Length: 163
Image (cartoon, rainbow, N blue to C red):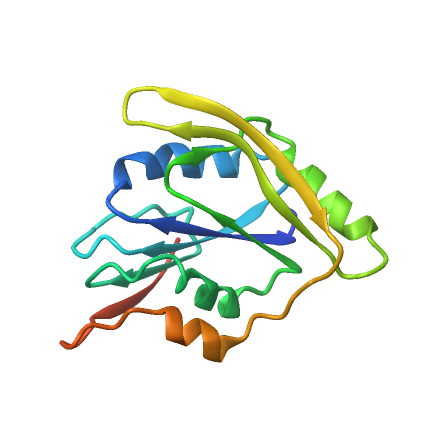
């Protein structure tokens, strides 16, 4: 029996579906189980992978802010954002992040990145900049909704169950 995930990855995609299989392989090969929610801004994308727990599709690009709405569906203790052009280098990075969060007496966040940015043909550059924040700021959904760009015409939104 697979262990229950403690963290949900909020993966954002905009016209880089070719990177997603590699990113999903990378996330699923971490030393701890993860749930993956995909917010797909690509418009007409038909990308599907059974390892994704939820897929949110929009008919047009809504930017980065809506991925925070996907967090409302998460049942895990923690959430983490992830972009469609980034790979985590070490297979135990998420485990270390979860362990660090579990050890904190007060609610805290870890902000930053550790990994590589990806291109269609090559790895571009290694990056590492993890920081622990002193407090957890609540997301103001009213402010978040102001950031979501809605066009004058009707936006198509589809929620798909993975698996």
